[in-house]
Amino acid sequence: MDHLQQELLKLICATCNLHDVDQGSIGPDDPLIGPDSPLGTDSLDALEIAVTVQKEYGVRMDSENTSRVVLQSLAHLANYIKKNR
Amino acid sequence: MLDFPHKQSAHCESGVAANLLTHRGINISEAMAFGIGVGLFFGYFPFVRINGMPLVTYRAAAGHILRQLIAIPGVQMYQKKFRNQDEAMAELDRALAASIPVGLQTGVFWLPYFPKALRFHFNAHNLVVYGKEGNEYLISDPVFPKPVRCQADDLARARFASGALAPKGKMYYLTQVPEKLERRPLIARGVRSVSKSMLASPFPLIGVRGIRFLAKRLAKWPQRLGRERADLHLGHVVRMQEEIGTGGGGFRFMYAAFLQESAEVMQERRLHDCAASLTGAGDTWREFAAMAARICKDRALPDDSYASMAACINRGAAMEEKVFTELQQWAKQHP
Image (cartoon, rainbow over the protein chains, first blue to last red):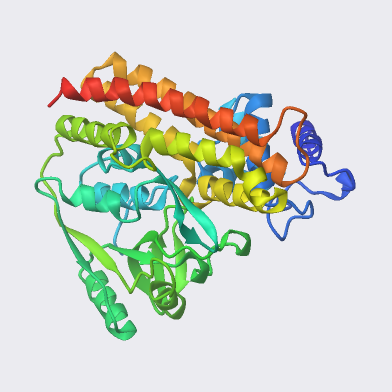
């Protein structure tokens, strides 16, 4: 995992109060949201993540579909931020 | 194989409309299709219940954008619903054999190419079928970055999903388009129509009045419904905002993109300024949604409360009122 991906994982865990998640076990391509996510996050968490990312990095996810695509994994999210920052 | 211009979009109906028109030589963005298709709306209908929860909608009813687009002079569309599944699939095959890309209304839950986490019971999902190989259909589903494939049985099931907004096999395709789309009058018409519904609806549940009505009701939910049920209502409103068809924030951003594009077409600085203001309103909707999510998830910040959310919605209402008043005045000068 690169530096930005690690930073994002910390931010997501802090935003969603995921204190008992073993961050070392999360991979860059693991699903971020939904029943298959090791974080156990859902669409309401996704919303908060989208807003927090906008605040912290100044990158807006313009629509539901964009956020669905971007929040597929840490790798997708990090790439989106790098491209749009 | 038909060469279909697949483009990922934020909202399925405007995405399909834009892709179908582009295929016929009318190069149009999704935002422009959404704007001239009068896609933006707000309605809060507490007496209409979905799974026991009040209906709140942030966009025009399903099918409205396509109806507006086929009302454009020179545009004609063939549309049909079916009772018989075999007949519906046979007619789809005949259109494909004639190299016609076909729009379909489907139920998301039955489309296996959707990841499980994204499947939900929504029966007004639009997509375009543009080919068939063996028993597989080639699909331009605007939600996805690339075209997808779907087995015939699965597609038939999605076309005949039951429940609210049942698609009944609905298919549609363009039969005629004008040589050139004159956008200026369509932009003015679209802006006029949305401004009217947002500002001048006689019903207090629609437009800016509806947004304020939602804020007023929401502030009282904990007293009226008890904390647990209030949180359920809140979760529902936010899910309707952000999940069912792009969401309030998302639609405001898309309309802002339409205004931005229109500012270039019309050479109008005012539209550019309105786009920026509407983006601000979209951010306010997102701010409300994030606060609601924190409350639903029991991780509220010290300033989060139902009263703060109501204040946030009222701020958004004031911003939208200002934008649409400006747009209404602009539209009056462009009959």
